[in-house]
Amino acid sequence: MLTLVEQSEPLPSHWSDLKAILRQRRSDPPMRLYLTAYAALGMILARLGDLDGAWEIATRLQTIDDDNEFGVTLILAILSPQEDDDD
Image (tube, rainbow, N blue to C red; front, top):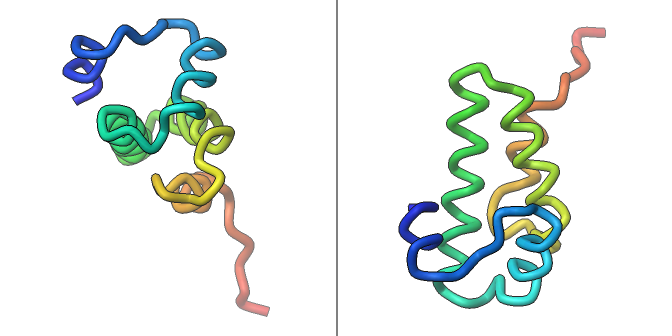
């Protein structure tokens, strides 16, 4: 999905440039698809054990996803160590 959107939309490859475009156009259907697919990639990377890659995606998305529309809070909660409540 990421590749399909990248083929139809002229998106920059550098994150700082891409972030500005995604923040500005996050309500546009192609950008929503891109952000949803990017969040899904973060979940897949976490599931496959690439926690650093998943963390990078989640922190990037967190700068764009102010309303938690793309599940960034969930990804970060999964990746963050949990304290045991067995006291």
